[in-house]
Image (cartoon, rainbow, N blue to C red; front, side, top):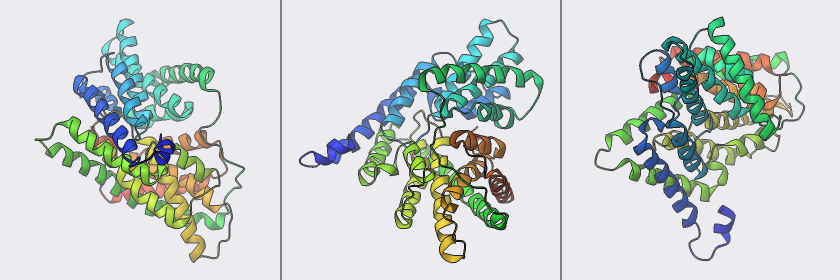
Length: 378
């Protein structure tokens, strides 16, 4: 569509702006019918497990499916994992109820199949399971481990029949980082923790701002946000959307020149929280990973200019570490972030820098008094 609009006579740039606005507005109309379809849905899964909310009805599945396609497909900076987790939770709840399970076990099936939803979104079965243990429930007991592993295995097996068995990102061979560089990764992780705190504040700030606009219908708010994101698409296609293309370009070794990377980081850093504030179905994970990869690439370029490193593979390594560290800083689930990124990239050579950077990021975010994003949203 962007290519066609660029060749079209007249103000062709208005076409993607209009398409993004209409897509966001249509997704917001679905949310008006099924309000629970709004946003990521992960916070609702956690609230249900804690007994703070009622489980989702099965009608959430078509609403989240169609709304997610419209919102993400129109170019909003949202991830596919939020809808798949929430749809999985609704399917798990219905399964548990139809099986006549007690309410406690229904909550377990809800979380187990929610983890399967995350696993199929990123072709990351262990990451999906860890998400249930570390983030959704906060426990690691046999009673929830077994059904979660069964659900994840079944879901990923089915998805691989359709999409194949390959990592989300194609990454070349990466050598283990030199132990001499470990302090640099720790400093990077600490800086990422600060960035994660700012990102969470921006998400909550935009949500508060859109909620305060009482006189404007939510559908109109979503359309305006969609139009803004559509304009970003016109300026640079990498500035909007889920971010998979941008992440692949960075971790695949193509890279982005430093001035362009700084611009993309600024645009996506604002556009992600703004898109989430539109109230349409869509998650936070995929945009988080793209921001983390950009940030890691920029940090490596600056470090190479300032320090006598001269490591040609540092940019890709720092980008992959940035994905896990930024995830850890915002979500506060470091094990899930590390394993997700390892499964998505099929790279395990830099697990030590990933662990060190993620630990530093979480420590700084905790010391700053910032709550994990899903705790705040819940």
